[in-house]
Length: 256
Image (cartoon, rainbow, N blue to C red; front, top):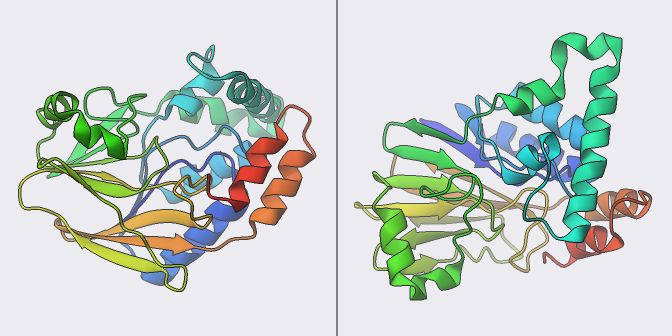
């Protein structure tokens, strides 16, 4: 089976459309989304609709939950963005023609985790699926890594940090490091356990502004793909919305 896995779209329609176009060219059998469809970006409703229509499995992210309930643990800029996002979702859902397709209903029914064969799909971690960050530097915190890996059957796919790479039980962190002149790097997964961060579609933070997602072939190999998109368009939209900090648009061109 050939599966595409995306995460952390964050309301970035231009990035999501570019990634779906690339996925269609790869002829995958299924698409899974690991959450944070909304938050930060200027097109939350359009992104929720696309993910709902294209992805067979969608996991709840902390920004998705924050848009439904009182946001918890967000900085001031992220909280303002979440509250604006909520207003956009509610505006969509109040329209009579959308009564049978409420976006808040879709988000509210998303699971926090999903298991399928050797795969576990979460947004944060196997220990705290919604909101635990697992950063590359956590390999120097063996107790944390050991506790999380105890809850991983074989392979756990996650997002949340926006930093792509593979964690092993060594522990070590394997960064895909896709060169700017290329679009893909392939990583063979260890035969035991691994945590695979699939990176971010809509707000990469590894110094590469290109959208990031993975394709899983079989059950032991991942292909990290980097897709260029017109981030200037997304940035201009963000700059035009008073409730979204300009920084959220500026960072897109820096991959930070």
